[in-house]
Image 1 (cartoon, rainbow, N blue to C red):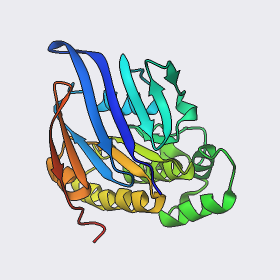
Image 2: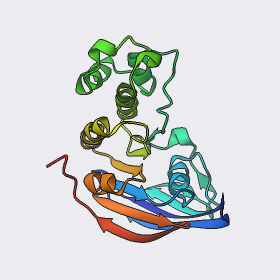
Image 3: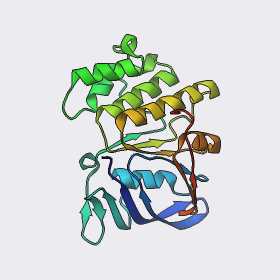
Length: 226
């Protein structure tokens, strides 16, 4: 069973409008696909980075299932490698000196060639397995980054505007691929996007953040998995 996520964290942010306090309190059901929306500087990416352990909250708690990843009062703070997460960045962060196959395999704690081959097949990349990222298109790089995220079998998949640099036609195709990857992984996915139509198309729940606070939640239904 996919564990729920409980978040109650605060952190000071320096924005173009001055210093603000990010305060997010939310329980996310296990297996949901969450879209975070809001203007630049509202705290969306900061929240992802706190979940991943790349940024430390000023205070609060992060709990995944029965496992506490962060608790400021009890001085618990799991390192990123101790948290069962995969983080997909805007620029995909692929290793340029590694092939497609090697990029995917790198994410595995226990190397499993069979799973790597399975992921290459899911994303139609068997013919590209030996290619380096520099020779791939934007859509192909996105598929490699997704396959690499899945290779580690995380409990939480974090996606920071993964489709922002892709044209409209490819973007719609990859939205469905991300959702199929989410379903394959059977994890909880949290994605930052500025595109409300994309959020309504993909999310089971939309969380709006403004000035560091949740202002409204939307229940949504994904059309790609119907």
